[in-house]
Length: 328
Ligand code: UFG
Image (cartoon, rainbow, N blue to C red):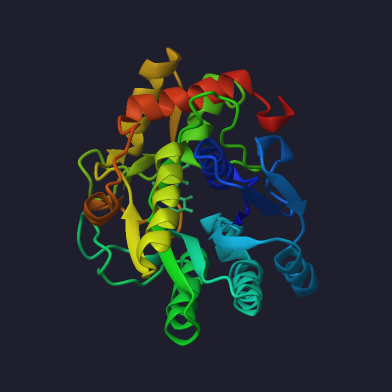
């Protein structure tokens, strides 16, 4: 039996696939390669196709023995979701409904779903716990929350069990530097800072310095992508062991401001990294920090790369060896 990894050629998907391969799992990666990279696939079988194509999906499930699905395939850029929300509903919600239908028809009853801290919106408590209110402030977070709700009913009515993982700020790269983060265009803080360090950009723009935080810049909880990957393997094994649905946050429980991240990157890279002040970005909450106590207690998850220096160092090793991303 195989584990189907949708979006397995993407950033978090490829690192999870690598972790599954290491654990000797039999995997099938399904990716349309619109944003994923075939070079990020380190093993397993790659099937290129789109979740919006129902006939294609049906074929994937009928031609393969699939035990469970780990579902990453989605659009992820918050800014892009505000510009084109319907595209996000189409790719993130409708595709997942197609996937769930195909799973239901094929009798596949286990799914690990890639969700996000963006489902919370402006947090009511810091650190955020899973039972806090969910009120997304952008279409991206709303599409992920919509899928979470569909999963609840797919469980209650169809017996499809889920583990939902709400990630905070995924960052870093595989320790081997063979795979890493390559988005086009890049919008995330750490890769952009490292592109400045590499001389590919002139400066890092700090989006606002009058937030209600000690240095005025936004605080986020950065979590290493391999620690996220490990949590997916644990989530899969939880479904195998007790077949019950659950939601977990995934972060390191420690927040860093934009300025702190830039300072640590200066130390790691030894480069000056010029910063300039820029206007605030719409919909950016001041502080997002996770409590991951639930997954620590229940799945014995423990981050291996919880120091921001190490997270940035792994990302730096990837960026130095792949200055053009997967195009080397
Ligand atoms: N930032 C800058 N300059 C930049 C880029 C980012 O100042 O050039 C700031 C942002 O304003 C934010 C912080 O750096 O305060 C982190 O920004 P990212 O774009 O790296 O990440 P976000 O926190 O906006 O979002 C990320 C993922 C989302 C996910 C969210 C959950 O991109 O998909 O984390 O916390 F929903």
